[in-house]
Image (tube, rainbow, N blue to C red):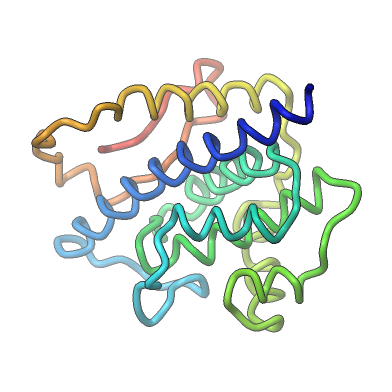
Length: 201
């Protein structure tokens, strides 16, 4: 019964996470027009044609990792975004950041997992690039990989609240505060016990 609950919950995690990341990426794409953003190793030359949700579904389908890995990957993305504030998540880097954060979370969380070459194929990149992305992500996040149960549940709750506030979608979104979008992240401040969100959308 627990296995059944995990398999049915996984698509919800994908939907919640992809909805949040799509919103953050689109906001940062808009802010890029007003504020120059630096380019990192995660930045592609063009926007991938596959949507964030379809990309996450592809990773879930082939990686065979535990559902908790996607929540932990979200925590890692948040930590990376906080430490690398000059590289906001946008449409040009979100896919590479996703495949890398999932790869690292799988290695940290699961006992059995596929190697980097397999994840590179799933992510549509070369093994060499996958290896470079992994190392860069680890250094960029300060090798902060431990996720406490409290932290895990906080991020789960945030993803659920994110989806509840987005459904149903309003016909017209309120105007965005462009001054705050320069450093839009999908993050909490982990130094604060309240874990207040710092989304600027």
